[in-house]
Image 1 (cartoon, rainbow over the protein chains, first blue to last red):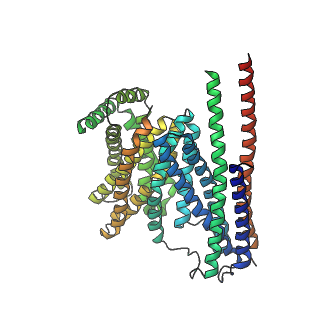
Image 2: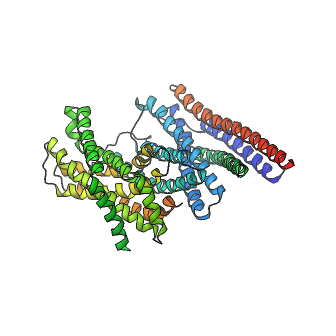
Image 3: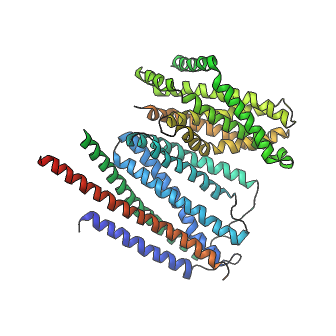
Length: 225
Length: 219
Length: 49
């Protein structure tokens, strides 16, 4: 097996192992929360998924900057792949949030600061993906999307701060009372690492795919000439 | 360099003044938004929702207007002409920005008094003017960048709102939250944080726009 | 153990989404690899001529 395949297999194995560890800690190790019960365990997946989505957008930001300065296809491929995975994970945040909120507070949606920021981010990066799709040629799409990737990410802290201020005027839902006990923290960390590895796995695959697509488009264009 | 910015701005301004079609159409649209939202929101809530209704009208009208001012066919030809000159791309950004800002400011200046009258609010509100200037600057900084971007895509009419609205969400939230105390004649303290957000947004996106605009109009 | 159904739903959604995405990528990969093979074949053929 060549080096790249070995690395890929290793990453897959590691990710799988950590996902299993995550499942074990979430269901066997973590304590049951007093007030809300079993449903609280969603927290251990909901939060890491949100953090990883944020990481994904950060990588898109870096990829966009690198693409605009160096114009190498792989930076654009990385930015696009990371945005795709980011949108996927943000969608999960937006779905697991309500699934958690419904039994606990009886409502599907809450304009909680983090959930609302996730919603706005979701919309921004969907726009990013749409720009890629609706641009004239692929080169233009990459360039325009890179601009969106940069502007969008810089907007993130502004959105979060503004929404936070907006919502602290209406203190409604508290995630749960009390801080995190030691075992809860450990569980959260294990899940965070597991999902970060999953992110790396998915983005590597997706980036490779995008590079393949670009290569095919180039070959086709060369053939026409 | 300032002279070049002014030159671009003046050309756009004269062009718009000659036909006036875009401005009038957008004004009518914004007015319609005001009215329809008032119907939709209903009697009891309307007073509380008033600031929101104003800013929805201004943001939607602004977006539609931005779309129109950049979508002219001549626009692309003119942009290409500008690009041939050895002009710093940022200059083009600021020239266009001045145009967008003026446009949306005119929109606000016309729509706001109508809004205040419709909701039986006091008409002389200098603090509201401040909020409007800051918010419109935020809209213009992002809008100019994204309008030039959207024009280069296939679905340009719908791409601009999709790009613009989520990114200016902080401006809309801050503007609405700042307008409410002004309408209620509350002290400055209630406004302060929101004004800070607007100023921060403006500064940040003016800088980002200046740096990044060249990549949008490349080619 | 109330709300176990909701807990399960949340985990299932996450799993389904990730799995679905992986599947989607695998299919795309196969399609693209096939396309590259076809392109290479036609390039070789045109070169032979």
